[in-house]
Structures are given as structure tokens and as C-alpha cells.
Amino acid sequence: MFRPLSPVLGPLVLALIALLGAGPARAEDYKASPEMAMELRHARWFDGEKLQSGTLYVDDGRFVEKRPRKVNRLLELRGQTLVAPLADAHNHNLQSAWGLDKFGQDYLRDGVFYAAMLCADPAAIDPIRARVAQAETPDVLFATACITSSDGQPLAMLQSGTPPMSLDQIVDKAVLVMDTPEQVAQKWPLVAGRHSDLVKVIMSYHDRPELRQQPEQRGRLGVTPEVMAEVVRRAHAEQRRVVVHIESAADFAAAVRAGADFIAELPGYFPQHGEDPESHLIPPEVAALAAEKKIGLITATVATRLFQPTPELLARIEAVQKQNLERLKAAGARLLVGSDLFTGNALSELHHLDQLGVLDKAALLRLASVETPRALFPQRKLGCFQPGCEASFLVLAGNPLENLDALDKPLLRIKQGRVLTQLEDVAATAGEEDNALNSSAASKKKATGKKAAAKSTKKKPAGKPASKAGTR
Image (cartoon, rainbow, N blue to C red; front, side):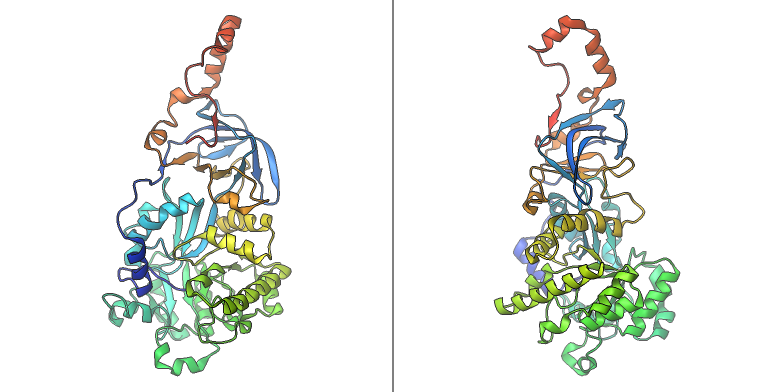
């Protein structure tokens, strides 16, 4: 689905603003503590398959093998569970200053530290690039090279905005328009100037040529398979990654055959033209080819709720979603988690996938906290707890392998060795030296002898004691 947040917002977005209320960042925004060295005692963590247990150490924003010389925080984690943060590979709600202010804190609250915004006007992104990937904001990729056809999405949305945009303001500015492979060659230099983390291509029912003859569909369709394939070819020649928006099963197959890096959703999240939901089943041979090519297939099943289908239609759509997930799972395809839910994020998608019942909880947690972050940021060591991995994790009260509801209210959020907290004084003092539990302090205590040791049973030593994870 395509729901861009550009300087001119579409009717759906304007309605959401009216409903939710616009305004500056909220008072309870998360603050990041100074970077801290940590000892995580009696830890239990998800390694991508099962739970491991032991003691973990953090220094300089990464997990390390040995206990740091000075430990700023010793956390006693008995009975709690550590998981890596989640990632949302498909959304549009952080691709403006307003959206980042409104929803960025929700991502942190829900433990979603990584995201991809999949079709944004460069003019809206340039002012906020420096604000993402900071200690107190999610790490975000932006697709600002968004390619469609002269009758494709999101032209109709942008033209019906308030105030409406003219085609002169849209074409090759807000989005790039390419109708033939020759136009791809002619306009390709425009891609480099947009500083896009991903190249987005929009397909929409290319197998329904009669839709192009319907005036009411103008601005709602997408490119041909020939254009999409040429975009993929040129992007790959420059080591650029391509994500393809699709609607139908035929769109999905064309994107697979072209070798796209990502497909932004599974086909059939909603039958846009009244077709049978069952027409969106992925053929087994296409699922096998997607697996062979290792294409990242973003689920985006929860986006169906935005259309408010009748109970009967919803049941049919979800039956197709289940069958498609089963076929992709059987083929060994590379599934990734993304929501395309303007008012939600990956946590919403994870719960919907759990409801569908195709993938067990360990598989779902692995997709959201290991596979998807690594797919978005392949040069980083994410989703792991071994020495050298980024020390970003959530501390949960329960075991998400038993109940995914444990993800809903993390006790603690750590981003690259920094505690994220809504309490200003905690963030400001968390890393101070007088809070350190270090080897020199331990040696001093040992040197005081038995008399001091006896006193210690009556009087607390200076500095902070070992913390429980739930302490804010």
C-alpha cells in the first residue's frame, strides 16, 4: 500500500491528524542515558531459535566477552527475558517531521528500533534525516526515489490533497514517473540526486490492462513489468536495493522474476476492484523461485484492517493470507515483518501474524527481531547477543516464546548501551561515575577487612546497588 507523508497530505492522513491531534513532541518522550558499561547477571536471552542463559557484558555500545574494568550498571535479571529490538520493514508514518514527532516515540515504546519508510518526497525527508538514527529516535531507511507510471499511485492521492498538487509539482519531483524502459534510461540520473536508501517501484494490477482505460483509475495504477525489470537491472548495477509495491499475484510473480530485493507486501491485502480474494494466491512455483532468489518478502498482513472489510470478506482475505504464508514457509522463502499500518508498527503486525497461526512464536520473534533488522541494515551486527553485536535489547517480564503479549510492555529499553527512559533525572545520572560498580571500588572494599565487612551488613555502601531491570 502507498500512504506517503509529503508536504501535502492526502485525505486519509488529514483525517488521522484530526482524529489523533497534531502538535509538538509529547512531554513523555524518551531520553537516552549516557553510554554505559553493564553487567547483565542471570540473563536469559533469545538467540534466534531458543533461550540461552548466563551473564552478559556491555561496553562501548556493544556486547563484549569480558567484564569491563568499570561497570556503570549491574542488572539482576533473574526471571526476565532479553530480546533484540523489533523492525518494521514497511510503513509511511515517520516520513515527515510531523510523523516523526507523532509516532517516533510509539516505535520506541513498542520496542521497534528499526524501520523503512517506503515512498517519501525528498523535500519532506531532508529536514529530518539528521534526527533519525540518534540515541532517542528509531533508525530509519527512506525510499525517496519512488518510481511510478503516468497513471500510477500516488498521483491521484497527491492531486486530491489539501491543497491539491498539480502534476508539475508531482512528476519527477515528489515521485519519478517512468512509462517505458527508454524513459528509465533517460531519467535514471534523477535517482542519484535523491539520496534514497532504497529505490521503490510501484506496480498495481499490471495484469488488468482494462483498468488503464478507466478514467477513475488514473493515478492509481503502476508501472509495467518491463519498466520494473529495467529499474531493478540499473539499480543493481549501482549496488542499489529495490523494493516493489505489488497488488496482485501476477504483480508478485513479475517482481520475483525481475529479482527485486524486497517485495513490500503479500498480494491480496484487500481486493481493490472487487475481485475474489482467492485470485491472490501465490503459485507454489513462484514461492519456490522467491525462495531461490532470497527475496525479502514483507508480510504487511495487518494493513487489511484499514479497509474495514465485512466479517465474511475478512475471513476470506485471512484465509488467503494463511495459504500464502504456508506456501512461502514450505518453500523456505525469506519472510520479513512490516506492517504498512499508519497508526501502528511491527508490533501490530507481529500480533496479527500470531493470530493467523501459520508461524510459531519462535519463528515470529526471529523474523521481527533478527531477520528484519539485518535485512534493513546488513552492514551492522543486529539481533544478536554475542561479543561485537550492538548492545540494543528489550527486557521483558515474561517469556515471549510462551505468549507474545510479553512484548507489549518492556520493562527496559536499551539502545547501543544507553537506557531509554521517560524520566529526565534517570537519563541524566544513569552513567555517572559515582554509580559505577568497578574493580577499584571492589578492591577498596576488600581491603577494609572483616570489620568493614561486618559494618556493611548494617549500612549500605556508597553508590548505587545492583539494579532490577524494572526500576525506572
